[in-house]
Length: 553
Image (cartoon, rainbow, N blue to C red; front, side, top):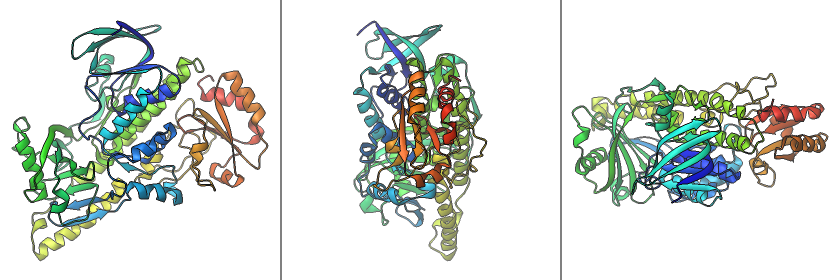
């Protein structure tokens, strides 16, 4: 082992945020060293839902199809279903497409779900494995699992980190321009900066508020033992044992989570007790093997008071901690990495000044506050809705209770799992590198997304006549859109890009798509955010526009 490594970025944390950042940097030829205390990527399933926006970023990096093939079989339904117990009464079911159906379906959708990709239900353990595999292939990217950051010092010209191997105690130094802490909720990096979480913690609810037991289990007999159609998410709703369970591989593996009840001592929970909790939710002694079990706390809606200090940045759970309703924590972390990745690369390459990096916190922290707020409301909707005593009774009163519960849970499922507004609607309107045009974006709503090219939001998507996604035409760095019925701005754009050292691809679209962008020209950032739009008469100011978007203004 070398005693000193030199790199552009030191990444602490090898979960989704850290691995995604390594991919973003490596694809741009920027070197990075990643360290993580764990021996490898996740064994436990952890997060279970990849939102459409994350899938669009995986598509941009070239491995969305591989992610979509991971986890559940291609024809496995991704329904969200609610039961009194898994072998008991079915209360509600929100039907969602299998991965193969989603691939076909997306090309015919418009409006709120006009997208290059639809969501995919896949356990985080599979996603991390793909992200790691692609990162390891990139020149300049070095991944060191089983290593931890002991300490670091920040200097005027960079960071020096002291790294220790967990196996043998050997140490080496990493000299980097920047440090990114993606090291989870107990982040050593965040604590070293003196940055605290703000928001709400320890919220108590009947469900999804308080201590939870997570059980990763194998049960080959589960599907044959329950009298219901298969689902991706199995919710158990009764007054005795609340739980949710995600199908991991569609055959025999499941991620089971249940609220600990008063009197249950988490320090004494063994594999036997974990198995019993699962069987109680099943309502039958279905055989299972406990692969792992641990406890965690639901009821957090926390955002760090800051996401940057000098050359040090925070991302993922180190910057925001969610209760997992809506599946927003992991997906917010992915967009942290995307946002920071192109900016670090632009600074390291000398295209942008260091001041560009100040826009990271300005852009991402409001989105974290927004998303933790949405997740908290979903947790309230589910966790504060209590089961009445007669819910499981084979009586008319029981029938009435189940109908009422089913109506409520159906409404809740549609609110939590059909969220194009949350998925696509995050915006950067206050950012200093967004060039506003005086227009207002559509209202922010969880379950409705109105495509808009108002600068600061996701570029409106469209499928072209030949079945190609508009996003597939974008350059990996910057893109300027123009339309067939306007005079080409190739000359002014080429001159501006050359002067600024920027990589900008000019894309000419059919004239009918001009109405989608409501402008002659639209400048799209590397993260597919509209930075500016304007008329062809403004072509002469493209140099100033691009300089402003690069942080040079």
